[in-house]
Image 1: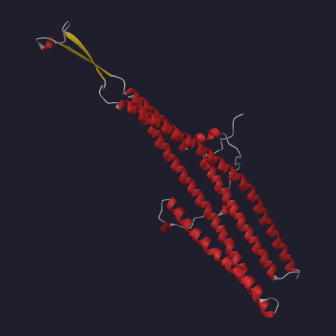
Image 2 (image 1 turned 60 degrees about the vertical axis):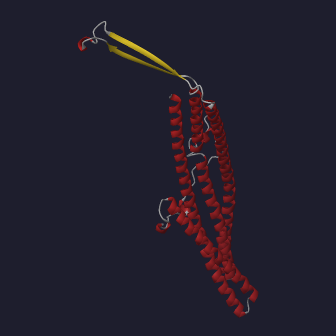
Length: 327
């Protein structure tokens, strides 16, 4: 029956598209985990530098306190700063270990066999052109949307099957042969015969089963249409959220990068003042800590921009290089 074949073909297509959607989601998860790994490594490196600077600063304050140049309150404040810097380091290290296990599982390996991934934030690159607006028709490329569309096709074909089953079923058969008293004359001219028979079958006492089967198929079609509409709306939301996030990330990354650059210039000026004898070592250490903190913030913003770019790729169901609207 053509309707049955069409329904099965649409269901097979839906299954293939669902598999493709799972593959894209897996790829996006791997990319997100790799970005997180690179971000955590950079944050750990900067935090270790902060701990080193705070340790040196505490040693200087204690020496000044012994010489009468600092009070016990200054020593306690620097001890608190060192403790706070140290307390943040184990949290980052735990996140790095958990993220490494996640990468191993996503790659199909046990966490115990996870090796150090060679991901560094400086080695990652954004696409040359990240779009700020995209044609809505590009969402049709998403495998989940296309799978929902195939489900609508399959449900529509099932309605056709249910409608066709309520009509009478016709069957025709033909026979060809011969009649003779001797086998050699059975198919001789004048002895052949044709027999054409036909049959009509129709359920009379089905107690409304076929009618309700048709209604069930129509209801399933309505459900498939609603699911398709929901998939399209979710796709639009994903794309819009990713575009808004990228726009905000661009501003935040620019501000964080500018802050880190300013902190770096402050550190260089403070070191020059120290060489000229205008400030002490504590001022340099404080400037170093401020620069490292600004560097951590810049790393976090940069990683967020990378992650949101990967989210846009997933939301669009693939590359957007051919997404430019035609004139």
